[in-house]
Amino acid sequence: MAPALARPLALTLPLTLPLARPLPLPLTLPLALPLTLALSRGAAVDSFAEKECPMRDLQNRTALVTGASKGIGVYIAQALAAEGMNLILAARSADKLEQVADALRATGRRVLCIPTDLSDRSSLHELVNRAEGEGGGVDVLVNNAGVEDWMTFDQLAVELIDEAIDVNLRAPVVLSRLLLPRMRERGRGHIVNIASLAGLGPVAYAEPYCLTKHGLIGFTRSLRATVRNENYPVSCSVVCPGLVDAGMYEDATRDFGVKAPLALGSSPPGRVARAVVRAIKRDLPEIIVNPIPYRLPLAIGLLAPRLAQWMVQWLGISKFFGIIARQRGRQAH
Ligand SMILES: NC(=O)c1ccc[n+]([C@@H]2O[C@H](COP(=O)([O-])OP(=O)(O)OC[C@H]3O[C@@H](n4cnc5c(N)ncnc54)[C@H](OP(=O)(O)O)[C@@H]3O)[C@@H](O)[C@H]2O)c1
Image 1 (cartoon, helix red, strand yellow):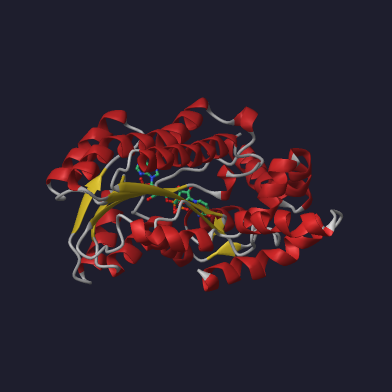
Image 2 (cartoon, rainbow, N blue to C red):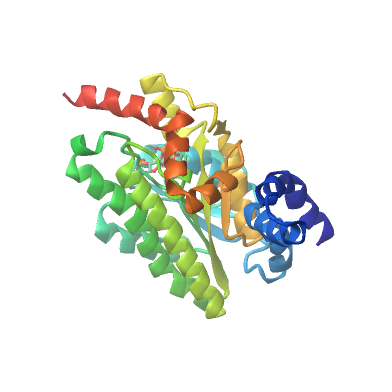
C-alpha cells in the first residue's frame, strides 16, 4: 500500500496543495489528500482491488479484438498474444486480418479471423455465435474498432453520424450484452472498451465521435457498477487514449499534414496495448493514455466548464481538428 500511495502523492500534491492554499491550514491537508488520490491514477486503491481480479492469468484464454486489421487493434492483439492468449480477430478487411493473424500464428498462438461489418446489425449475432462456436468461447472482449468523422458538423453526411453511432457505440454495447451471459456461465471474463480523451472532454469538429466516446465511457461505468453489485465473475474497463502514433491520427498526419498540439502530444500505440493488458490483469476501471497528465484539466473542466472550453481553444486543440475539418470540407466540394 505504501509504495502505491507514494507515487500519486508525489505526482499530484505539488498541484493540489497550491489549490488549497487560500484555505486555513487545518483544512488544507484534509482537502488536498482526497483530491490528490482522486486525481492520481488510482494506484493506491487498485492495489487493494487486485486480489479480486477475475482475469489475472491470461495464458491460453481467448480474446476477441474488434478493429484488428490495422492501427491500434494490431498492437492490442500482439500484446494479448504475448500474454499467451489465443485470438479472434474481427474487422471488415479479410485480407488484412489474415496478414495480422499469420504474424500471430508464427508466435504459436491460435488465431481465428471473422470478417465482420460492425455497422451491420445482424452481423453482431453471427460474430458472437462464430466466436463462441469455432473460437471456443470469448474470455476477453476488446471493443477497439472505431471510425472518426472530424468535420464541420453542418457539412457532415447524416450517414456518417449513423456509422459512428453503430460502430463506436452500438456494436460495443451489443457485443457486451451478447457475451456477458456466456462469460458468467464460464465464471470469468473481462470487457475492455477503447474510448478516447474525446469521451472525457470537449473536442471541436468531432461531434459524433465525441458523443459515441462519451457514451462508451458512460456505458462502461454503468456496467462496472452493475457487475460489482451483482458479484458477477466478470469485469470491464475503459481505456481513453489521447492522440496515438498509429491508426486514425497517423492517417490524419499523412493526409492533412497536421501535428499534435504541444499541449496534447501523442503516445506510441504500444502504450495503449499495454494499458489494455494492465486494465484486464489488474481490473482497472479507467486508464488515460497520454504523454501529458490530463486528470487535473479534466477535473477543472468539471468544476468550470467555461474555463475548460477556453483551455481547449487556447492550447490549440480546436485549431488542430479545425485544420482537418476544413481540408475535408474542401475535398467534399
Ligand atoms: N489513433 C488515435 O489517435 C486514437 C486516439 C484515441 C482513441 N482511438 C481509438 O482507438 C480505436 C482504434 O483506432 P485506430 O486509430 O487504430 O483506427 P484505424 O486505424 O482507423 O482502425 C480502425 C479499425 O476499426 C475497423 N473498423 C472500422 N469500421 C468498421 C466496421 N464497420 N466494422 C468492423 N470494423 C471496422 C477497421 O477495420 P476495417 O476497415 O478493415 O473494417 C480498423 O481495423 C478506435 O476506437 C479509436 O476511436 C484512436
